[in-house]
Image (cartoon, rainbow, N blue to C red):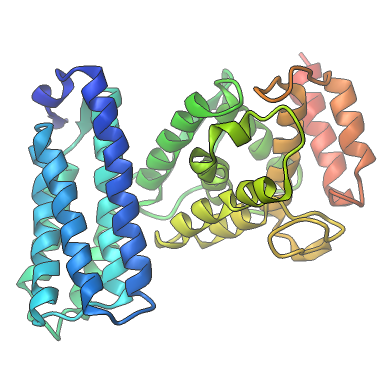
Length: 368
């Protein structure tokens, strides 16, 4: 099996890698923001800005000896250069293609940062599909970009994955081709959030375990692969909430609560931009909706709420009240937590989901 490594990068001082990682996030945010604007505004200056943002991204990667990932970024830069010159036209399909490549580059860099290696040579595949688009005559490139997107999404040929959670094996349903490479990336982000967040390490695995078990108890009303992605990504926006708000021991102000509420937009928009994750995006968007319509962001109620969102809300609530947090020193016992959740039946939670969740807790924690 081929392994990609970057010894010069791995040997760098950890403070340098940390500084690079922070700049990396800024680079990618700038590129994504520019693409979002381009999807709604036909402004030539935005194309120039996108070129500069990609050039900065490439330059930072080369600065830390990440030459393998700099090559596909340079190829993207060439595409944008043709758009600057007016020989190639930007459209939202290109935006999806650019972000698909950028997100895979980010996943590759994160793997190199954490383990020092990447399985296979994803940078070679990315470079090939970009070059295929570059080779296509401008004006006749729509099909080529579509094929490139499909090639990136279908890069993984594995059809199943076993996710290990707290010593138990839970089979995830068969995933469409390419979804498992995305899941690996989503999982990496979620585990990193565990390290940064207000909860204890292990939250990701615990939420996934509870969510998949509850889904199974209900007869799997939602695809477990989509639910897995939603669990990984639902709180990714919390990484952008100021720590003084996350760790505030007193009641949040109305303005602070609005900042907290905005966290769902990050995960939702991220999943919406990657083909095949529409259901997961809906789950993330709705996981703070309440059965009686008092939730956010849309005020949905009853059966309007995606079942995956209700499952995730139950798991999230249970975990939150049974674990200490930076802003709260107390925690509820297993029984007081389930009692509290049962008390919210018909108000916060769908009554038809409660029995399944109770069975999940009973089977997970009480049966031997």
